[in-house]
Amino acid sequence: MTISNKTFGKKLSIVILFLFINNLSKAQWNSSFDFSNNYNYENNIGLLHANNDYKTQGVKEVTTKFIHSKTNQLNTQEIYTIDKNGVGYFYKKYNKKGKIYLTRTYHLIDTARYDSMETAYRKDTFSSIYIFNDSKKIIELQYFNNKHEKYWTFKYTYNDKNKLASSTSLNKKGKQYFRNEFYYYDNGSIKETLYYNNKNKLKKIYSYACEPTGEVTKKVTQQNICKKRTYNSDSTFVEIFEGHDNKGHSSRRIVKYSKDSFPLEQLYYNHKDQEIKRYVSEYNDGKTINYQYYYKGKLKRAYHYTYNVKGLIESYQSINNKGKIKNNNVYEYSYF
Image 1 (cartoon, rainbow, N blue to C red):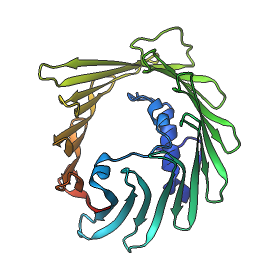
Image 2: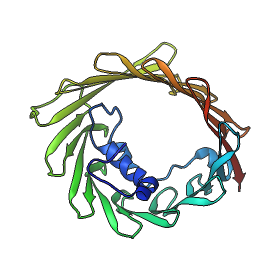
Image 3: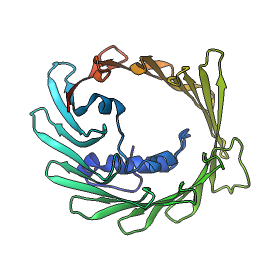
Image 4: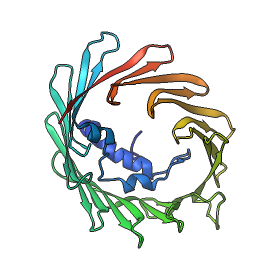
């Protein structure tokens, strides 16, 4: 995953560019169809996930040990510090010599919101600032490099129902890189997203209407996603997402759910209705124990999870299509 027309230093790309890349990749357009709601990411900026299991179990620290698959020796490890709300606010990572080389600190301003994040990688420090309005909605996100210079900004506006109306990406000179506008149905669900380029020209329309509406110029690509849900007699159900655009591209995603709404299988099809990707999940007591990834019908990677008596993840293994363990992680916990 890369950023078009932008080059950053190696250290910067390692440390915090995943935030920047994630934001752009969620907001920009590519040749394939994004069957998720693009506005969901922006709506969650500045929020940390509260793990309810950590909260109820009183977890104050999580240590993940990465075990070398061949030598079975400790390779690296990372530690998350958790508050009493189940939110991880401090992270540090150790190399195989036991030295800290990466830390990330979040400054919480309430239960889950934070107004700043600082990352230290070796001898360099990078940071980001989050600014909220009176309704606790983020209105600006600023990124700073290791020289404390602002190099990128995202700005957000909201409509009269306090729903995200626009997100704008600005470079270090304050010039627009892209802008998204969001529109909704009366029930609050997303209707469409409009994407404008750095010259503020409309280039993409991403619509949740099953059929295109209105005239679209040849220079604008309109993608339409149609979502359908059907229920089975045993209360399991299936969701079908079908996408097509005015350039002749199409694709489809099918998700099969258990009666408890757990996704059991996700299948992705190309414009020839050929299966490209498939994800299969298996659960026990509501927790994932096995997960498999297939590409063009062939198993590529399998994942296995175990849990301790408190229901917290105890180990994680990634196994390739030849049955060899590629990742072997062990989790340890300390409590308040």
